[in-house]
Length: 119
Image (cartoon, rainbow, N blue to C red; front, side, top):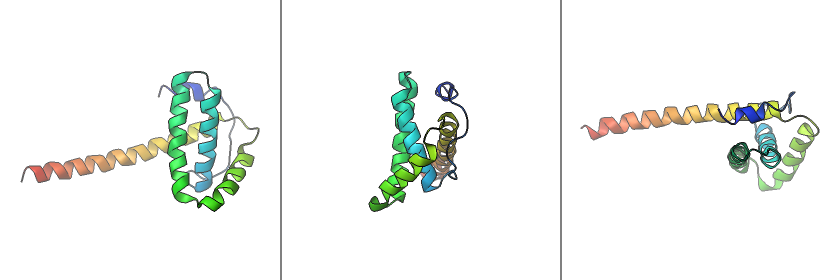
C-alpha cells in the first residue's frame, strides 16, 4: 500500500474502541480527516480524505443525528494529544477487511451471473 508509508511516520496506540463499533468509526472519521489536513504528500492526504468519507458514511448510518455531537466529543477526547499513526493503521486495516468482503460478494455475484448467461 503506497499510503502506508505516510502512516508509519506516526507512533503509539490511539483510541480504545473496538474495530467496527460506532465509537471506532467516529474515531477513524476524525483521525483520517486530521491526517488529510496535516500530511503534505497529496496522494496520502487524498487517501485519508477518502477514508474519512468511508467512515463518515458508516457513522451517518449508525448514529442518530441527535447523538452525533456527543459521539464526536467522546471520540475527540479518546484521541486527544495522542499520535495518530497506529489508529490510522487500524482504520486502514478495517477498510481492507471490508473491501475483501465486497470482493467476495462480487465474485459470488459474477459467478451466478455467469451461470445464468450460459442457460
